[in-house]
Length: 89
Image 1: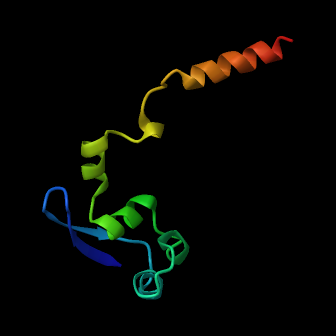
Image 2: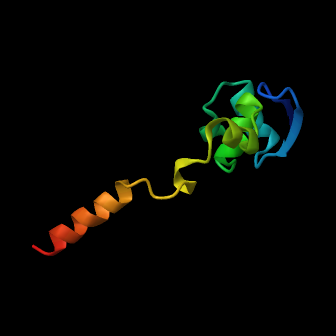
């Protein structure tokens, strides 16, 4: 389904194709089901757009890239070092 929303960040009008049926949308919008339950095939970005009108690009501009897209912050290296230490025992 195609949705058109106004961004509260930029005021721009955006449209997005969302992987949901009219029945799934009605379940969320009118019956107040949790959006992730009502629209299991919609992506997190699509659900965010429906709830807030914020696009993925605007989200990244405001808050930076998602954690899983950022380079290693040291935590993963710490876990690897710990696992290697355990494997040597």
